Length: 114
Image (cartoon, rainbow, N blue to C red):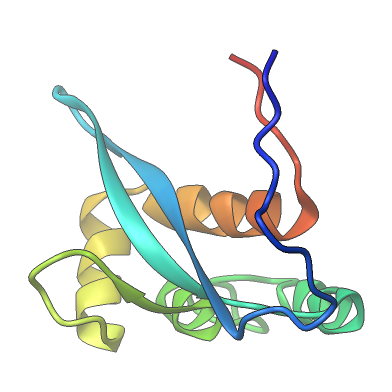
């Protein structure tokens, strides 16, 4: 197993980072969308996680609002805005969870099993 090592390590992280997200397309497999995510510190991530209770319920934020909070762009031709994100989560029901999972996995360095 080969490790990929960053060319230069710094305690000052970039304000954003890019990561691919696999979105399931019913009857057609998966498509990959590259998102630009917002960096967070450990404390900021904890606060964000606590704010997610009741997501898409009466007390919590809507999926599209959460995605706007964690990301600032994507590699689609459609604009990255609340309306497009709402369309994404309404038409591809697992999309919000896929994006949020990818975000947490990138921030925490978690790896998924093959």
